[in-house]
Picture 1 (tube, protein in one colour):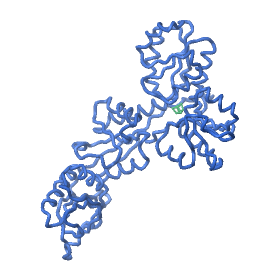
Picture 2: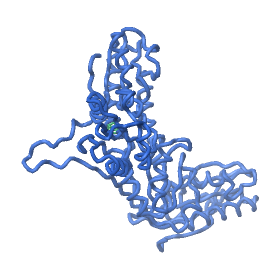
Picture 3: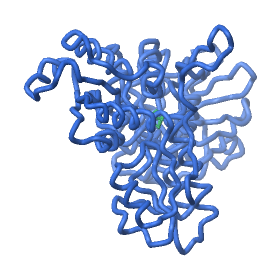
Picture 4: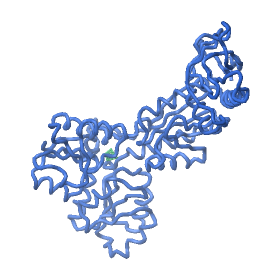
Length: 443
Ligand code: SF4
């Protein structure tokens, strides 16, 4: 840590016996205001018993280190502080009543534990936007529809958009209802199709009932659906490459021609297709949108090796959203000592990000709240990766960054990977379909 670091004890007031106060800031007699963004981490650590507060109440509060100098101090603040390059003082501290010597010792242990972590660090945020362009555009389109709909007859979304928890919350706040049953949508009202689309029978039923339809099916997803239908229509068996992950769109793709689609989850299954009696001359492949193209590449190779006359999509039709997100995570995880995946414990998206990050063999932890960040994770850590999953509330990222900024000067950068169509040499538009977005078909 830099040479301005100082560990000291100050006389303060306002701490009752039986409690430990973690300082959210300190009025220092010499350094002036000392910010303490890491205070929630210290309080949470005490709450977990690191160290054990011995049943004492834990409270977060600003402390006045000048109080003792004017004779009012009845407590001891143990604190560490340093000066940032711009002269601002930053630190951390905890205080206990002066008569409670054991509590003062606990404060000293707590501060020593965290002060030992104070150092400058690099922080790389990987793929800061968890939602793909199709999901973002789709949610905005549904919100627009909700704004024009009458509040007493809400817009219903069939299924649930695969989107960040904050975007889903915005839909709910706008009065949008979610359903898996068209019977729940009142006659004469509006149903929205999410970006991954809806099965064909649902589309047909909505039309037959004369429901208003807001179709936010992403153009890339719609293209894959059309390909499944077209390949089946020409008499082919369609091998739908879904990979090992569950995607919301898989059942939509299958619904385009259920009797003609075989799903393929791994390359080894190429040799199993024969038992379904497939005709090697009448075989097509479609890559399910929402999976990394890298996952599909091995399956495509295995299928082509086995069935050289297999036909399929033009590669321009592939969606690279998941590919790019995974690549950003792997790139960051390979460049840092510790990757923090922000997201709920039961979130499959966070689990997938964890698996991507862990593939490089470095430490990975999941955080559902900033306070879960343990001191032991940060020992010897100079560079940290942070990846938001869809279940992470938008407020969590700034909370984590704030807290880490209280543990030493922090350089924060972002890393994204973007695969985009390369403009044709003659300036003509490449073969990529329209950008993801939503269209109101009949609202
Ligand atoms: S096709 Fe790709 S861009 Fe479109 S919604 Fe699905 S994952 Fe997102």
